[in-house]
Length: 130
Image (tube, rainbow, N blue to C red; front, side, top):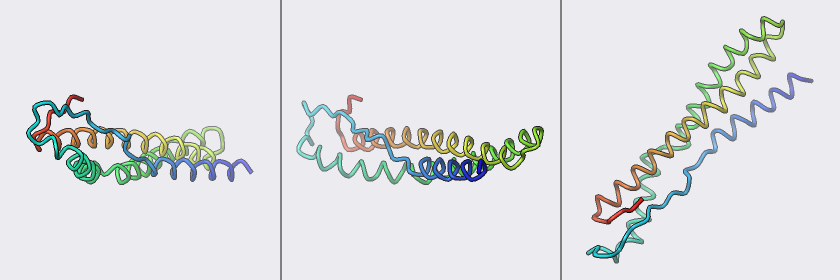
């Protein structure tokens, strides 16, 4: 019964860590003195798409969840074997490691998204404030 609960929790954690999306960041652009101010809306739209492609948020989150889950499973199995429950330890370790790895990689990918978005807008000649 406990093993089934841990397995279900592991599955849910891996699913959620793989569903990370970017934070919804949108740069603040100062239109004053911008010779291309009429293009701000279009450039925001295009740069959002380009930044999303560059950051690979979901891909990185899934990769982090898989690697973290694998490392956590090994560590959990080792610790669990000390108490005579290597399977439960492995499942708990996989859950904790998968969730931590997925979130960590998702945060890193989100920062790449923000940087790519800002750079895109600046390269198109806009004054990006944040």
